[in-house]
Length: 513
Image (tube, rainbow, N blue to C red; front, side):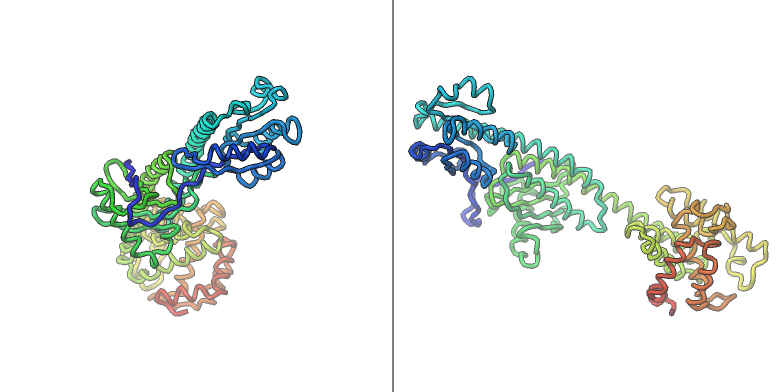
């Protein structure tokens, strides 16, 4: 994956925040020493970042400074202050109490006899030991620069460690995201990348603005935005400008004119195929380690995006298969076409009422549309007979459960629909068909579909009977609770009826309540 980033600010680009200074704590009870230190370091810069000196006249003051500035990079600490070992006790507090292993600690002392160098180095976790007489302006420069370089390198190692841990943590979440729409998935991906940038005080990013865009050929689509881009209606001009720059960069492999100096583009690639890209702007420049982590995350996001698309494609294919098979059932028995659609909605709402999560309830509703698909194998003379069936004819009708199960048994994705088609005529007391199973052994979706199926059959007119009222149908179902039907499902149906939801389904699907 190639990162495209402009190294120098464009004169037309908006001003961006300067990089924060390196913070150096100077702890010494002699004001002249602190003043001289400030004077010698007044023009100091490292990696284009100046110094911010924080002064403390005692270890007590130093502790307050540490609490106010947890991102101090280097501390120059005198030993003898309010006590003979105040500086050494401060070192111990920084390492043991504050658990700060990143800060570089340099002991400066004018009384080497009180704190001998060998003893201090052996017993305290410091990074350098200097006699104050040694610290000329040049040696102070060298000491501070070396300490800052060490601090920078340690932070990069830590950032990589945190970044790797973060990538490992969020990667399974990306693949397990269950989003109803791709837009939700895209927002989740962008949120994960932004979260990767905010790894703690070791990273220098304070605020992040970002866009996630997908690309099919030359067509670019905005999928999600955060920060400045969170309200696309009010940022259309700016968003279009970014899309234009990003498209030109990724397609032409060239540097876009006008790209902000603190911006980066992370393409979402799967092999040689470009799926899209993430555009980020920060309040400060990203360091190399942060960019590398973002690119690693972008690779994972691209793979997860493709996985999500494939998953959605499979779901769409499943919906098409269910729809086609349901149409076959409708053509076979036109009187039950609307019945099938109502069964799906009854099943969905009953499932929700029983505490089933929304996605699963939706799946159960779709699968219930195929509860009578086995009737395609029943002769029309029996299936459409206007009068009462003979025992022999009823025995033939009962085979539609086995036929339906056989039809749906050829594809694992239809296993749920198969259970419903096979078991929706089983009874809670074990007196149903085709197997005579009872109680909890009957799959829950089939128990729900059984109540939905009978309710709709009762309130629907047929050539051989008039429609029942909803009240009469519910009374009949309640009467057989615990014998024919699962009592919990019956109670759920009664609650829907009391709230008027059954009437609502009937009105919206072709029957009056």
